[in-house]
Each structure stands twice: as C-alpha cells, then as structure tokens.
Amino acid sequence: EPVLLPAREEYSREHFRALLEKDGASTADRVKGAMGIAWWNRHDAGRTIDVSSLRLGDAILLHLPGEALIRWQLLAQRMAEAAGRGASLDIPAEALSRPEEAPRAAGRPFLAAAAYGDCGPAYFPTAESYPRGGYEVSMAWVSPRADPILRAALRKLLAP
Image (spheres, rainbow, N blue to C red):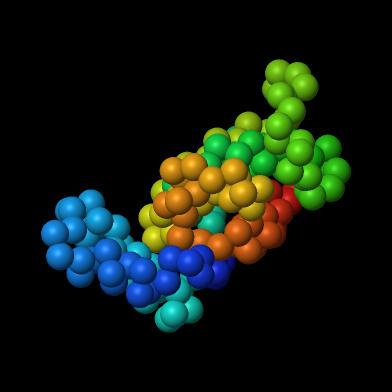
C-alpha cells in the first residue's frame, strides 16, 4: 500500500542543510543533514513509501516504514485480531496502553512487524508520542499528521 507521508515542518530542508554545512559539524550531524535533505528531496518529488504485508495461513508479516515505534506493532496486532473477529479496525490510542487480555488463541492471527522497510522518515512515532518528546520523537522526520495515513494503510492491509 503506497503512502505519501507529510514531512515534519520544524525539520525543514534548511534545518538539515545547516547541519550538513556547519563548520566543525560532527560526522553524525553531517550524516543526519544529508539523510534529512534526501528525505525532503523525496517528499518534494511526491515519492511514496510502500507499506506491505505477507500472509501465510494465520500468520501476517507486516513491513513498516522508518524505525517504527513498538506502538505501531501493538496497534497492528490489535487490528489483525479485530479483523479476525469481524470487528472494527479503528483501534483507539488508549487501547495500546492496556496489556493483552489473553494469550493468542487458536484461530487468532499471529502478526509480526518488521520496521525499516524504508529508512527515509527516520523514526516513526504514533501521533500521541509527539507531545511526550524523547530521542525517537526528536529524530522523527514525519509530521504527526502521518499517523492517520499509516493507520488507513494498516486497515486496508489487515482487513479480512
């Protein structure tokens, strides 16, 4: 499922160019600058990122873009379980804070997520992660507005 992810405005092309061109910049900052500029070039060209899944029996392997936070796998697992029950795949964010109610029962799908299907967006938090901050959020080059786009792709991929 191709997705076009909105770039994070505060990490503009100029922000990344300054990192790349700063006198005395560390190698890490130069790499971050170069990768960020590449992300903006890709974004401005309208190039999409593929989110994909592979189903083998009751097992699903989901490929996510960027370094997706674990909450994306938890969400996808809940969505796959809901799809298996014929329930809505619209899972509220607060549901991800609750532990799994029961071990996986026979007939329930098994879902594993593999992140870094494409490292262009760097880290990929859920929208509710942005206000909390932290390293991963500071290294996320997609806007929180990317969250509903990825959720829509997951609903499409995980629907029965």
